Length: 313
Image 1 (cartoon, helix red, strand yellow):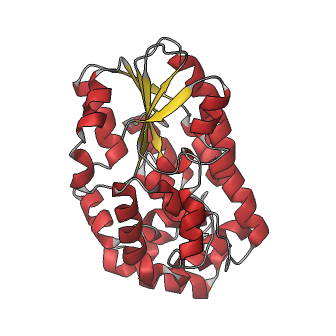
Image 2 (tube, helix red, strand yellow):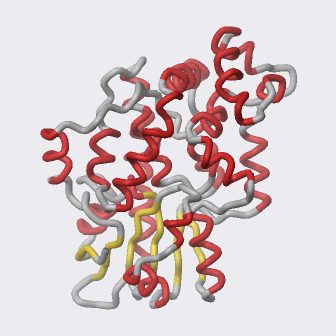
C-alpha cells in the first residue's frame, strides 16, 4: 500500500501531508490486465474536467500532483484559460505560516517521549541510516511522531533538496498564481481535520507504516518517476490501480481502514463542500488527482448531484 501513500504526491497540499499513513510493500509494474481494468475506471483519463449543470455556467476541477518539478508550472493552454475564466479557486487547504506551524507542532511528540522508545532501537537505527544522506542527524528525529517520518521517507532526494531550496510544490504555486490573478481563494478542509487523520492512527499502525516504507525506500526514485510520467499523460487510472493493490502489506485491515479515511471519506466530504460552490459557475477546484476517478471519486459524486462532467484536458 505504499502505492497509495505515494499517491499523496497527487493530492497533498503541503509537504507534511505526504504522511498518508498507509503502509505498503514496494509497488510492482502494472500488468496488461491491470492496465486494461484501469482504463475502464470512470474519470481515470484526464487532469482537467468541465463541470456544469443543464448547460449553465462552467466550472473546472483539476487533479494535481504534489511535486516541485518545474514542468508542472508550465500550464497547458486549457488549464491556464480555466484559471483565467474563474472567479474562485478552491483547494484542499489554504497555506498560511500559522497553520504550517500548527502542523509542525502536531508532528512532535510530547515532552518526555522519544521516537526510538516507540518504534524500537532497530527500526530507529534503520530510519536514521536512511535519512542521514539528507543531513538529518539521528538526535533530531527523536522528537517526531512515527507518522511524521513519512515527510522525509516518501520523497525522492531531488524533491527534498528542492523543497529545502524553497521551490514550491504545484498546489502551493497554484495558490500563489490565483492570488496574483486576483482570484478569491477558498479551502475545502481545515487543518484540524488533516491533523486528526494523522493523529488518529494508533502507534502500532504508525510503526507498521514506517517499517514498510523503509523496506521499499531504495526504490523511491523509480516509483516517483513512474508516477510522474503517468500523471503528465493524465493516466490517473493506472495510479489508482496501484493504490488499490494491497498485496504484500503487513496489515491488510490497517491498510483498508486508512485508505477509507484518507481517500474515500474525504472524497465524500469534499464533494459535499464543492457542490454549493458550483451553482453560479466560475469556480476552479484544484485537489489531488487521486480524489477524482472511480465510482466513489469526487467527479462521480458531483455527477450524482446533477452535474455533467466532460474532460477539458
